[in-house]
Length: 240
Image (cartoon, rainbow, N blue to C red; front, side, top):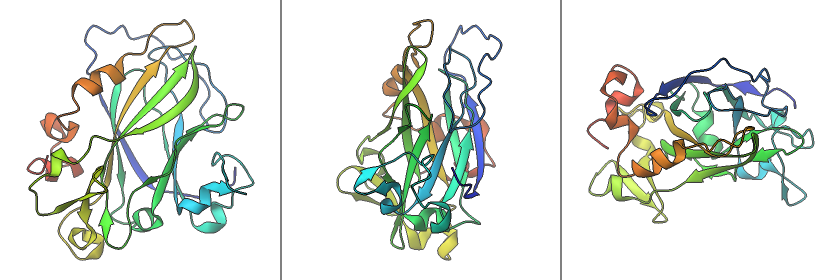
């Protein structure tokens, strides 16, 4: 994979799973373009690429950003790499305040692996009119190997009645781009991604964190964690 520029990222681990037993990390694969077989509590490396929707397709087929047939680097794509702990719920934040090309690129794809080349569908993040800042991503494993990545949509209930937001296609809440600091507004439109796991690890142990997230879908991790004050999340406390 050719190396596109990286955007600034922050990963905040939110340990919601009570009674978990912490073990040593056994996964020593640190690049998203390699295959890993994980167990619960390992670190797991995956990445998110930001580009136009068409950039993720070759001859009509969606390919992994690890595939050299895609021209992501020449198309000003951006890349964010994360290493969360398997089966813990994490809140990943991507600071776009100094890098508006991330949201102007239009779409993002989460991916990892080479032989299985797991990748999500492209999901809209922004253009000159609207910016989406809140996402939920589920990583699905089978016997420790990543098989799928899913963007989960919760509808527009969380932004109902909030003038700064609009509901796009009855599926997702978006902020008017004119409200973002990158366009002279007052809101830091950085991206927040709630991350969870499902399926089984290499020992056939069930990964439960997606179940925990699905139980909390009527809330936002932004509002639940007051200890994230003075970060990008604090500004959303009154919105979610």
